[in-house]
Image 1: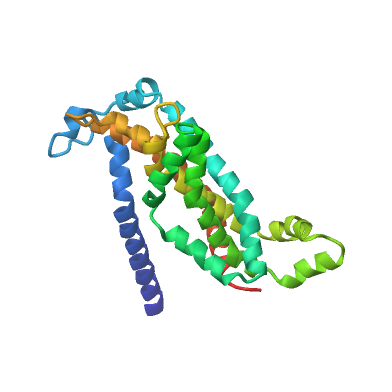
Image 2: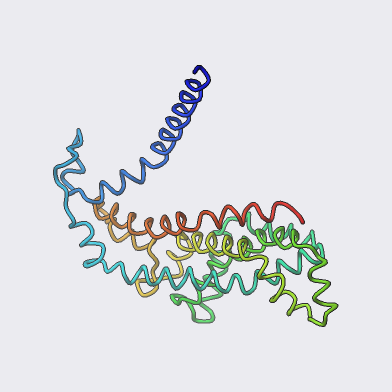
Length: 274
């Protein structure tokens, strides 16, 4: 009986700690969602009246007045494009580094990943202005790849190293070229890692603010920059700002929840060599 009581108490303490941690980390998000339904007058009142002043006007501002659908489309194009091109370039590069044990190249990729993006901002702007692609999807995709591409290579290199070399060598002995072996043998075995790299690269691009605020205008502006539409010189529309932030956060939150098992599998699979 004592053992059952101890087990019950242990489980209760465990779930209580988990609940407190969840509330600690979720409280900013829940407060943001709640404030997105409040009128500006009610947001400024203390103490908070939880049921008074609830409205959908803030979301009307986001989708009707500010036309956030356009900015969401821009973010999808830029994040999707940078992720796809990052995979096209990054996967073969990571495979080559892993296959030929190019430690110096791997370290160089890691160093470039650690450098702040603002280091590249002015050179990129000057270069893109000279060739006339400022305020285009291409300039944003290329600039966002500075963040996504090194990460894809850095993540996939140990993943490819964990795949037994005998499989690739057997395919080559059977008459397949290196590229064929890579496409038909290595990539199918690397799906968890590729999914993980894609999700994280897409997320980094979706949340990127710095490159978009310099290289884009209203035509190609992405959602993180579009939030500034609710900030003026004299005031801040907190209700609209919270609604816009909620709209930006929800897609990434859904993506993270639905794909978390692939992310965990991909992050751990490359940590153990076969």
